Length: 410
Ligand SMILES: Cc1cc2nc3c(=O)[nH]c(=O)nc-3n(C[C@H](O)[C@H](O)[C@H](O)COP(=O)(O)OP(=O)(O)OC[C@H]3O[C@@H](n4cnc5c(N)ncnc54)[C@H](O)[C@@H]3O)c2cc1C
Figure 1 (cartoon, rainbow, N blue to C red):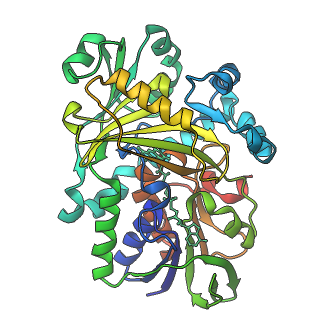
Figure 2 (cartoon, rainbow, N blue to C red; figure 1 turned 180 degrees about the vertical axis):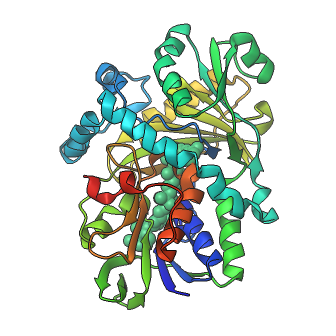
């Protein structure tokens, strides 16, 4: 049994805690914000094993200029952030060539193929299973032309093992009658589902683990120092604690810990937003995504959550009004029964330029384990990431070859 520190209490940190405690380890979580804040707080809640198509894909060469300049685009760049993000953007473009995009898609598909098994032991607990809504996610296209443009990525998904059904406009309406009749095609993804309350799920997971001995320290970690037989973890209040292993699960803020442990990773953030329509969840029965507008509408316990968009703009708390307006305007157009949103949220997705997370050991010490960079898929990949973390600590063979996820690939 080992003493393990996990930095970050989002989806990845908590799922890692769950798997590590199954192996009998003593685990302490560190997070100044407590449980399920960060990007894990306000996501779209979809378990999306079909999500192997990264944002870095060949269509960006065609679409990026239009995306960056159009007021209807769900993809934005904060121009003042351009000098900071330029190196990331350059790598992102390099990762968008066909060959590299296909390599990223294959790496994601391999992880996604283990995603359900990664959740299985967590969902054996009735207190956690109650948050699962087993309705497949539906992607919508408002024109036949945009559906046709997505055929290449649908073909690649199929090749990589994703199964789905293509629906006509009529079938979309039969499935979700409250949608406006503006969608020409739909794609229904098998084996997908959603959480009715992602934050509630994580809070329940935390309470379950806390009852079994998990500790939470609401403090910020400032430094990790690997030693010969462990890792010193220093917190902002200058205390130092020794652990046998430390897991870095700080989402978009993980690069500094990687650097302290010998790895330079080009991690940045894709900012994303949500707006919530309280009490409107009866309007749809499943997560419904509008492909061209880059968002999902998910029926949750407290209302319909409309989540998505991508903004490159660093960690400023300042919200982009026009992206929030776009989410509001577009969701009301898709689902006319919606009234006015009553709250909004900004979150920071952790994203590497090739769209593939970092999972594996640090260069400076095999006792530091990285689990970050899950971009649009952190909820989906939490279970399998936690399993991999536990396998590395236990020196068991992980469910797949980890070389594609190494920090040293950059
Ligand atoms: C709009 C939007 C919609 C999304 N929809 C989906 C979806 O439908 N399905 C899906 O699978 N994924 C989705 N995602 C992505 C998903 O939310 C993220 O990938 C996931 O939450 C990342 O989890 P994490 O645990 O790595 O990071 P986070 O949830 O960000 O947690 C990291 C934690 O680390 C803590 N931390 C940071 N620095 C320190 C420090 N120095 N010391 C201690 N703690 C620290 C933070 O306080 C934070 O709580 C969406 C994201 C967004 C923004």
